[in-house]
Length: 314
Image (cartoon, rainbow, N blue to C red; front, side, top):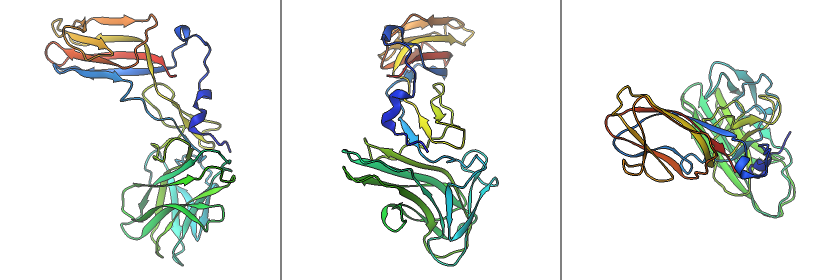
């Protein structure tokens, strides 16, 4: 099992040039926005910066048929295609109804020692077969006896709900394995379903990242990847576009007077914007270096701007 971390992101893209001026574009964004007489961003690097993230769970969306990494404890577990928070399947848990603490656990690879504080976050989405019974998500040690973090008790509903828990590993803590547990809070016999299961280790924040798996698609090209076989390896979410290098835009209005004004790294006005008349296109393929935003404003009506922006991540 790979042990990727967000800080490894510099190796996730191949940089075929050390010279920024000829660095090949490795991100693209499709655009289809209706302009108005109020300025708005076509694309903002700050707003769309996204987060770099990893998920060490091998089959987090349970889209693969193998669920052996999820270990039943006081329950039966199976892949189920009747319920899913995303995709086509989830993990079905059938508690034995003998005691509290019935469900499943997932065990991490060895988390190495670090001179810095490390932050573990775990998350998943869960729903019940009925709105009855309660479950708890916890992060525990390798024996399952010591709790390091918990979501608190959650009353099951018939819709998927996200649960999460975090733990700060003190600096210079010896290498260790950790377990993610989803178990019944009190004894009950209500089946429940888990999906979008994620375990991440970071050194920059305690915040819980947005869920990641290699099946996801982003708006900037292939940002999400499996590190190995699909639904059988860890996942990464690459950094988003940070420098705009080129674009191709078309004003889809059939009326020439429906002008769209574009401005770069500033808010568009009719005074500072470059006009694109209705039916016209505006392309720029020479290397640019915009690091803020592209803004637009319409002279009248609500003409639609379509096209693509491309650039690089740094």
